[in-house]
Image (tube, rainbow, N blue to C red):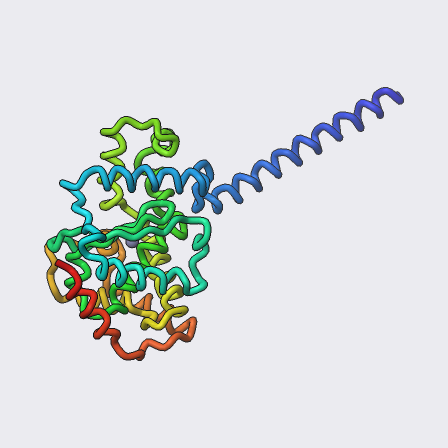
Length: 278
Ligand SMILES: [Zn+2]
């Protein structure tokens, strides 16, 4: 009888432990599902290494990415760095000290675009700079692209599109050159989720609120491009969210965090920037 009681307790104990593990497992799965927003397998160091490889691939392909020569156009680079640093020094960029944050200008007047690799390598096309009227608009767009890297959207989207295996190979410098080229080219048309687009817009407002720019500069951009019927919609417009809804969401965010949207246009310095381009 005693042995039965002892066994009974033993089995109850085992069953409770199994239940505990099942419950903990379920809980971890639920937490995991929520946490899948973050790249779990691709850490910050790997993102930086990946970004560096992609940057090098871009620099090695001047046919596709004709980088504006800094020696020839030092003023243009002073302007783009000034704008980039204003955003980075807003106090709102989480990865400000972790990521590299380099910026380069691509000499291509036909392309209205900008993008940022994981790890913070930023590329802005002359087409976009020339198309816009104010520094606030450009800062709004750059804030959006910086947010994709800062919030690690880029790494997540690349993981989804190319698989973790290839990402790790690239980060380790072991990918074939064709693979690297494919990933670098894919970065420009990288599809972000609807949530990530809205989040990048909201973060653009957050960043700009800590600068001298109008915090809804990104909304000004959408309003301008909305009526233009641009042939090649840039990354920040190529995905699902409707531009009109995004303008509303950006302005609503500005209201929520109480940042002024009636600051005067920053046109004079911006015109100097445009004049410094070829
Ligand atoms: Zn975007």
